[in-house]
Image (tube, rainbow, N blue to C red; front, side):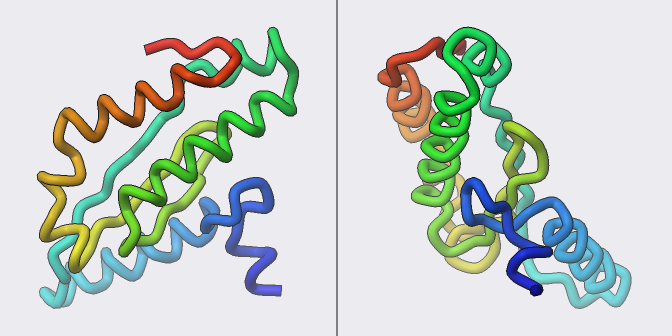
Length: 125
């Protein structure tokens, strides 16, 4: 039952409910001065409405799954959450936090955008 309540059925990553729980735990640690080093990274996959309107929800679902897969590839050691239709959050800690500059550098983000542009449907930068 916990898996159903805390995971997004389309992507398989944790959902908004799980993110709210994780955020509450981090807030408690911050208040107790026991917070680990971390960063919260928010991703918004622009263009989903246009894809859904022009090519249908199946294409939109594929866009979401592929975007999520790329985010998970970059943040291999951190939880990724789908918090909205096309919005994702990663909480970078430990290895990913220590290598955050490398993960977020322009060339990797550019690779992310280039990959999404290859899909046979509308993508807007």
